[in-house]
Image 1: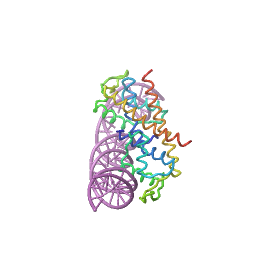
Image 2: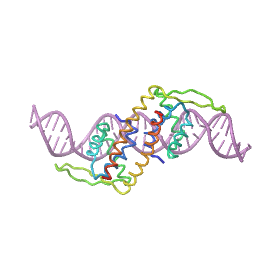
Image 3: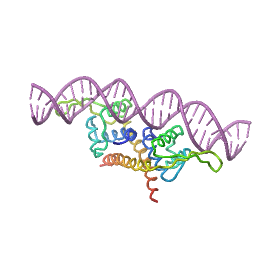
Length: 110
Length: 110
DNA sequence: CACTATACATAGCCGTGATATGTATGTCAA
DNA sequence: TTGACATACATATCACGGCTATGTATAGTG
């Protein structure tokens, strides 16, 4: 299981990056993240839906109600302009921290 | 300023990686992190000391009181065996999330 | 007809950074 | 001498966010 803090730090960047590929909905996002992480990132719906609501409230993403092929209701989310900006900033910050960590790790073998 | 969640996710991994280079103390760790991140990661003492106390309580690191060249008291921290194990696990988790994010980012340009 | 997967939502608990505050000492310039 | 600043550690309060549990509803399957 991935640490809570790491989940918190990666949730918004991952959602933004996923939605940058095209609109999606809660349940599918959970499955997609699980698949892309080889089953290591197992998000719960109780965690993701508040994340989506917050991001929509902050204007990063927008939603529309739609229906699946079977007639089931789905809430589709898609990126807004501010979301794309946020995605870039998240990536910059993530890269920075990653480089510091990677640099330290590399020095361990010198 | 780096997002709070990212700070939380990277604090323990960074402290462990730094102490893997040799023992250090609170104030120096703050300076070192700031220097290695080009001033982007500006940890506060009110954040770091509780982190160190928690890690010591959990048996990841140990401390000893020492003195600087000028006679000022310092609390030096060093890695314990469990800390090295935790460092490896942190790195694995971090790498996993990073690869998922990097994979998504790469696809944006395909 | 029961079970599982799909699909969304929220309430309460707990951990953690941010901020503010407190204590203490060494250095350096006015 | 005095004031400012850096060094050095510590903790209390607050706000935020994931985790867990719970609730509602429907489609597909054995």
